[in-house]
Length: 352
Image (cartoon, rainbow, N blue to C red; front, side):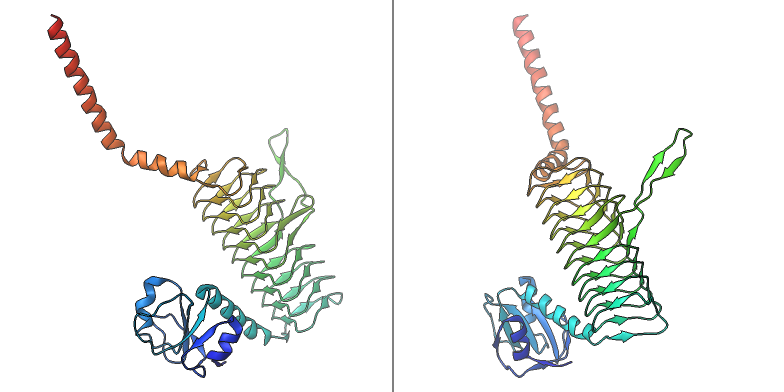
């Protein structure tokens, strides 16, 4: 696919500076791009590459002041990074729209309802009463259990497993190897020391515009629903337990785990390898630093925490600064002790 600078500018609402007919057919990093490629400049530390790059078209911020002439055609936008993301999404959309039809072998139950322009890859399995919306792309090896619903324009990548009764919204992207709707971890201790399984009869609801990374697991609720609300973004290798709720536009980085029945508010940012205990509430706008352990509810919105157990981020930084200064503090204390001892000795001699 080939696009001119003016066509790209129309997609991202930019202004062309240079040859509007300059065309590109692929993408490249600004420091490595070749003729015929599109790049972008968002981070000022890469600005030097702007003046010697071989890229044909570059997306830049409107506020950028050129220090010397450039050979590439520029497209100025308010936010180069966001504009580039928009363009990549459009490019990906065009590519996926070309996928339609049902590859063989694939099993699709006679009661399944397929929307228009659907793609089902080879070795996919669609169970009883599955409902697939328009423009959905189901890649090879996907399993959709009975009564699963998938909304319009959702992409389910290779090897994803979605158990019975789960609901997937519109414009969702689920990456390879993810498992949605497996049993929650519920066992009742018995008098003889054994553990009796508690049946997990709920489901998982993934709302619109959610992205879920590869090899993430989201457990079905014991009763009711585990819910990932609209706009949330989940990284690879996450464990989301039964009856958890993840709020709108919240993000969780890789290797984190959220225990059962925890409620995460909206616009929460959770770093990698964070552990959160069950039955707590994480207030809207909370920020949890990587490798933190959250053992109680975060009730105050828009606060940042770190450490295990997690506590106020600013206080933690002060504590770290004090710890780093402990050798110097110890030295000063010893000097003060020696000074006090000398003063006491002098006073004793004077009183003798």
